[in-house]
Length: 111
Image (tube, rainbow, N blue to C red; front, side, top):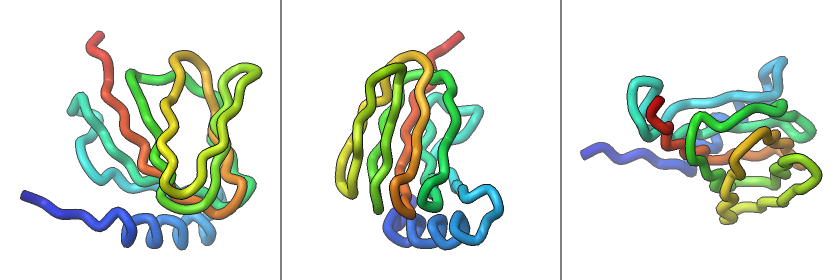
């Protein structure tokens, strides 16, 4: 068994994102490219955007800290600490309204 503190990982990644030129930082907590399930703690400096992209499979965003906005087409959803956002199929983007950390969970569909 392995235990990971998502709270500690969120703090670390926010600090790294704030210091990074890109305004982003990430660390895979579980899984990886070779697995079906992948959970990644991603952090964003306020105002940083993850540009529009397609899902590799089913996905959720759990907001660990801060506030983010998930957009898909004309729709958008705000997520604050403790909120779980279901990522819609299709193109979507994510923007941090403040320094934020999320747990992105993706279950890749088999091709």
